Amino acid sequence: MNPPDEAALLDALRAIVDPEIGLNIVDLGLVYSAEVDNGIARVKMTLTTRGCPMHDSLVQGARAVLLEVPGVTEADVEVVWDPPWHPSMITEAGRAAVGLA
Amino acid sequence: MAVSSPTFAAPEAVRTAVPATARSRPVVSSGGASSALAPSVTLPLRFVITGVLALLAGLVLLAARPDILAAYHYNQYVVAATHLFVLGFVCTIVMGAMYQLVPVALETRLHSERTAKWQFAFHVIGVAGMVWMFWRWDLKQVGHFGSVVAMGVGLFAYNIGRTLWCVPRWNVVATGIASALFWLVCAVTAGLVVTAAKCTYDSVATLSPVNPLWAALKALQGTANFVNRFDALGVMHAHAHLGVVGFFVMMIVSVSYKLVPMFLLSDLQNERRARLGLWLLNAAVLGLFFTIALRSAWKLAFALLGAAAVTLYLVEMRAILRARRRRLIDWGLRHFVMALWLLGGATVLGVVLATSWLPVTERTVQLETVYAWLGIVGVVTFTILGFLYKIVPFIVWHHNYSHHVGRHKVPSLADLYSEPLQIAGFWLFLGGFALAAAGAGLMKEGWARAGVLVLLASLAVFGINLAGMLRHFFRPRLAPLVPAAKPVLSKP
Image 1 (spheres, one colour):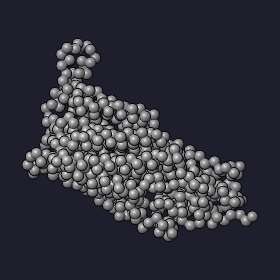
Image 2: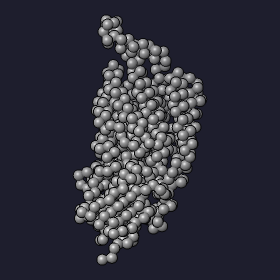
Image 3: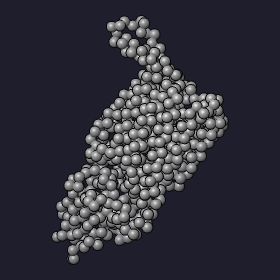
Image 4: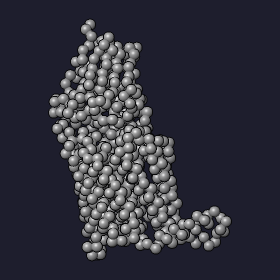
């Protein structure tokens, strides 16, 4: 079996939806990087604001869906604040879908 | 991203690696950095539900006695109804919301949940007794129950004050909340002093000076003698401004600087302007208290200072709204935007009342009631209803669904209530508010009663939505998780 690639991880992470904005964390631009090394999925992500009340939920949810990707044996989700998230990081599709300027 | 609940941890603290053995059943607890800091779900909800019940009681009272609105306001029934609204409804909900919001707004944790629970008990007992005794005009008992309220407020101020003490980054929001707390304590103290001034202390003459009660009564008698040198109505109005402008408006201003940008994906546009507005508002509250109590002509100057502060705030809010990345303003925030318009109207009316331009007639004096209605039911209640549509869904969602993220498809916050009902509630509230205001201003009891009945209909609609949200505690709505390659969209 081929090891999962970045696209597979991002597809899995699209199942995690920010409950306030109504958009998944990938199209929201919260995921900065996703890679697999020897079965360990490593994701760097951020949140829309420091003190985000959804912090735990999104991080734990991301970890859970990564572990469901075939070929992933461990999941390492790191929250970073640099660069800080900005609405311009939202993808075009996501922007159109939730009515963002 | 949504509001409430403390949730900040250093990046290192949230770095997580799950061993392979956990793969078959990922351990996704609801605990963790943020959840450990959050107050339990029952704490803010008990305040919210109690506050909504007090609003219901207040509206029922006004529907039964519309003369409270449509007749001159200096009587025991107006005083009782006002305290039911401001302490029973507004204060209760604001306190519960602060326990939930202050930690998230300021990235810290609530100092003591246990203290908050004790405060709730003091508050409910004190307010219920106080309103009842105001209705009976038994001011001695008002003083006793007011002291119970004051003990609760003391616990609240201590708890939030200690929470502020731990704020990692002091900012304009923290300054505003600290200011609001200060004015709350001042307002309660002033209220107790006003009550003390209306009591008699005949027993001082019969008690022995060695009796510990004698010293306390003597001090109260001295306070009463001092306060009674001032105009009673002026002192009462000064006390009301401390509470409504100093606590409620100050709290709205400061918290909205954090929450509105958060909801609308925007930023504070000019921190200097925001800070200047807060200090001007503080100066205005201080000046208004003394000039209103003393019936000084200088109150116009401080009213204009307050108007300048409100103008700066509204300019900043307009800038935040214009810079938003979310085009659509949801109906929760539209409540708040309506409150901003009403804040502008209340400020203009306040300045007019501070002048001596209006002749003192039965009609013009009713404008004071309209001013209070605009402030308490317009500005503050619209803001509260709007933010409750943010706070309650988050509390419910966090408790019922946060630990299912990544394992099940969970509803979004907006899925927890009916937007059509929310819109209906908004228009009913606006219509009822305006009709009752007209009834108060024109001294028409029928209009006031009709307006209040429409407000009750609006509250019923809100109650249905609230019940719908709370139902998720008993019937969570979960669906199988379906990974998606395209944007997964919920109701925006």
